[in-house]
Structures are given as structure tokens and as C-alpha cells.
Length: 123
Image (cartoon, rainbow, N blue to C red):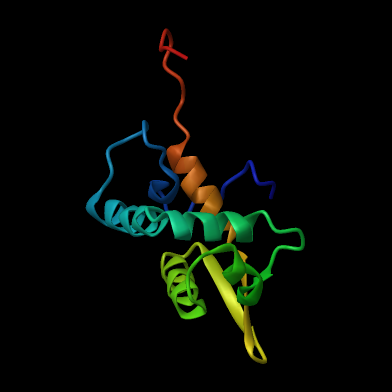
């Protein structure tokens, strides 16, 4: 499956419904709110960007901490929130924890945000 093709789960495709396709249901709105809340903090947004853009696909927390004027426990807290939102996953290796983005979650978010351009709509 390419990154352009999303697997539709369920008969109504609710997991992959775009913003302009239909109004959100309560459960889908609650799930998306968790993701947007996690991304609503500049530190978490930067962390996700650092992880997702990393060559090789994973980053040690020890490599991310110097990019911020925050303590390592604070960075770990932000990463925990990204993990709880389902955007990243991690694995402990000895002393350090390595993080990677979950492409399926990023693809679902992108599919939701992508709306067809209406005819005659301003560019």
C-alpha cells in the first residue's frame, strides 16, 4: 500500500472521512481533538517534526533534548503526550528511549485535513 492509499476500516469509512465529506460524529471528534490537542503545543509540534523528518526513522530522546531550553524530563513528558495521542511510538534501549512516527496516524490526519477544492473557490 502506498502512502497515497489509505485502508478504509469499517463499512462507513468513518476513520478516513475528510473534513468536507461529512460532519464529525462524537467519537471521531473526540479522537481527533486528542491529536490536535497534542499538536497544539509548539514544543510537541517541533518534536513530532524532528522525529518524522529523521533519516532512518527513529530518534533518541538524548538527541532531541539539546534542541530545546527544557529539561529532559519535560521533553519526555511532551513525548509521552504525543505517544498517548497515537502519533509516535517508542522503545527503551538501555538508558535511552528511541522514538519514531507512526505513518498510519500521520496519513489519517493528512487525509482528514485534505479537502477537495470547491469549484470557483479562491486559491
